[in-house]
Length: 217
Image (cartoon, rainbow, N blue to C red; front, side, top):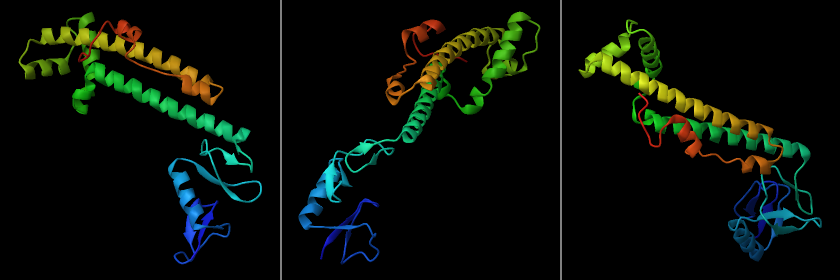
């Protein structure tokens, strides 16, 4: 019985248990097998050194790095792919954080989607009513009737909340766009990682005139 290790597949094989063993598999002792398993559990890597022997080294820095026989290295092309992937991941996280902030502050995360979809229409009617008290407001009138409250009261509240929501989104849009520019212009992985964002920052709240969550509709 003997163990083998394949650098290509990164797997261990046993002559008594496996029939299809990779051609690059190298025979190892029971002791090496145990040592290699322990090394992998610690996050280290098993590579073929410049003498063609298996050895343990620090873990592969990233999926873009390759072992050149002496050390982990990354080509210019791989670096470009790594940077592009990091930017894409950072932008996705930024967009998700911005949306989550809007949903939390506006109260959208506590309402059914169909109701949130009416916000735009409610805002349009509320603005039209604010400019002309005789403007038609069928959606707001129906909501007021269903709630059993005066339509004029609902329209005024809808207008005030629409303005606050517009201020909130404008502030978040500006902050998000500024960070997006920083991410897109980053020239290194370190610069991308250095971009941090927190939509709860005082300047964002100040722009909306709120210091706590409020239902924007």
